[in-house]
Length: 412
Ligand code: SF4
Image (cartoon, rainbow, N blue to C red):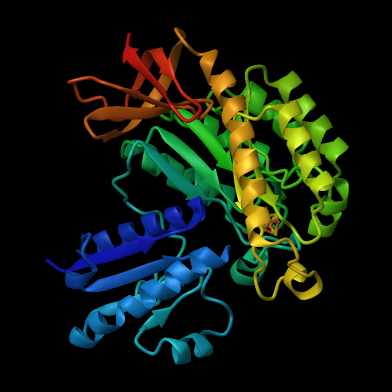
């Protein structure tokens, strides 16, 4: 049996695209393997959002050279954000790679774009609904690598979702760099709220999620729709990036701290019990200690369930890399990053401790080291023991231990 090996790093969009690619390859009769050394097709799904990620991709590419030399008939392909518009140059730099194809494109030797795939899904699956981004935040390389926004038609998404649910999926996460832009480029201009309403009606589907929201594009209609639809999880990722207006302007985020705060208050009023997560960048060019403190103050005040924090790293070609000096020393960036992680640890400890003794419903999506794991609708990770097969089930768990990162409990 021929086999394939896919190596994926980066965002959930990459994971979703790797899943789709796996499906194509399995359709064609290939088996998945964890060993690049024996695979007939090797695909690297790359990320260059940060320098550290790009370095890992380049190292991996170099490490595959001897393998490709000893097995020239194995196909080596690269996709993801490393693949820019100058594919010719990439071939020059990495002549041992057979194919480079852009994220979201179909692999060149598998020409079936847009087809509904007969995947054998896990209980929780991803569906990309919009590719690319039109925002050009000054630090971000995504619009240069993934291009402008392109939404998939509602009917195509609903069809794929229905098929996945018929095959056993219980939870669908809709993906896009900015899901709030969904539909504006389509003929009848549907939006994310319309799409959620259609998907909510699918029999057998238990949960709907979506990532990532942009604060400047989240409408009241969407907030009201999330509150109203029973299958839409009450968890929203709303990247703030900084708690300082000057830095937000330099980042070209398109909102002020006050507007962001009002949006969070509005969401919390309309969706009781909602969990919020956010993304933060520290050490953006010229970020002073006072400006950094504004971010800490915002996080202390709004108390998010989860904060994903990253140190700024300039990406060649972006507005910030062209126009702003990367003038915060690395040790200072690391110190700021650690300070936010520490602050968030305290906040999450407190938020999660309120769940002690409570019963939560989780969707079981995997077994890890002998324990079942699943997530609540509010995206809390929960572990429990059970000898029975629980995969794909919605189960009630009484929480017996809490920590900032996860919960443990017993099945009711
Ligand atoms: Fe990048 Fe900004 Fe688009 Fe997000 S919204 S993908 S940060 S340009």
